[in-house]
Image (cartoon, rainbow, N blue to C red; front, side):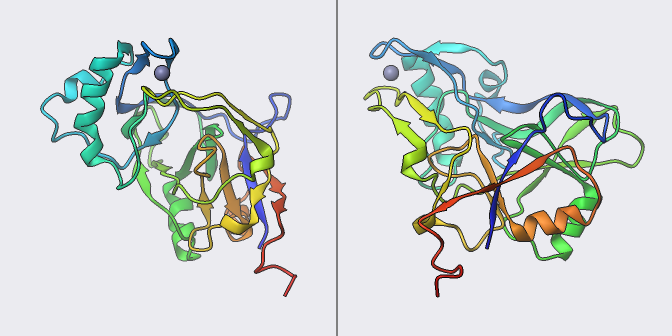
Length: 245
Ligand SMILES: [Zn+2]
């Protein structure tokens, strides 16, 4: 099985589709000002399927901002029980569907950033019909879409690992968890941790990177051009399910 890193095309590449979004996820944890490491930071991790409607303090989770650590920690502790088990909250973490406005026309698959993947309703239907695994679609709430067009953001399962040679990680701050991370722009995947139960994922140690396998690439290619590129990722060591045996 081949694996590919989903990327946005270079700015100089002519685009097939005119679509653009001005939208954010409905809720987010604030960024944090940490008294221990003195970093002010906020991550990019989004969980569109997590619904914070039941929290009485949800209105404090709408305006993106930075809070001192104690207030951040208090809000994070409210959100924690609603997260998938084992996943810790982090500053800037986003929840709920994308909400905002859209302009222009969208291809089958689009990515505003390398970690935000959207498909049209027609593409979602096709991916399901092809048996693509790991689809967690969340309907985006967008004004201005062309008549009849619906976009879904795909929440990416957190699976697999970038190979350790592609990632340099510093020690985490004991208070807020901040740590220096440097990741190769063309990371390889850890062949001992490949996910075999999903066809798209983001690695646990590189959650702003999106990977898909050849099943996904073939399924989406059948729908015509999209404004994304797929860079084949090396797998180190080579997958045991590959040609070795
Ligand atoms: Zn810190």
